[in-house]
Length: 165
Image (cartoon, rainbow, N blue to C red; front, side):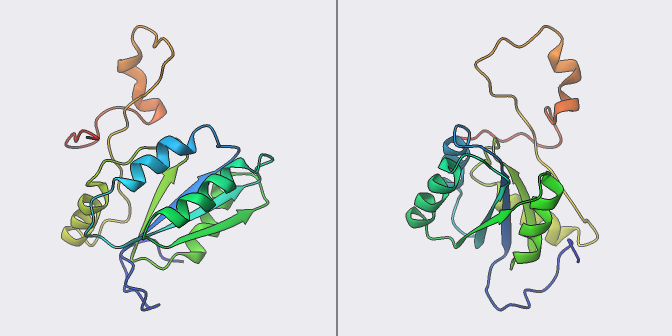
């Protein structure tokens, strides 16, 4: 299986396959899906949502409703083996896009995220993976000194900052 840029051999015209792995995520998905609705048009994408051994059906129900509310194709899959690696593999095998983007069930992509990722991979065809800036969004009290270690949880700068407006 190849994860780098490649030709779309399916003829689907899909540039990006967003692979959203989720597990009992009904409380987190509305925020994530809200960000996906606001993606800037221009890059064709599909959403492959992989339910990773959830015991709560509400996440699947939210995704089914979301699929009816957007123009992008949505594929809802189930992966019975627990573990994100299994869910991502299931999504990657079903992907039709030239580029694969992993989205966690608590991620909010910025409006131009796909546009920027495609531009980077087109400019650097030798690149096999990329990432963005992770910003902690929480209502909980953040401990003093967290900024110095936020990278351990996927937070902090990894490139030019963009606001989610």
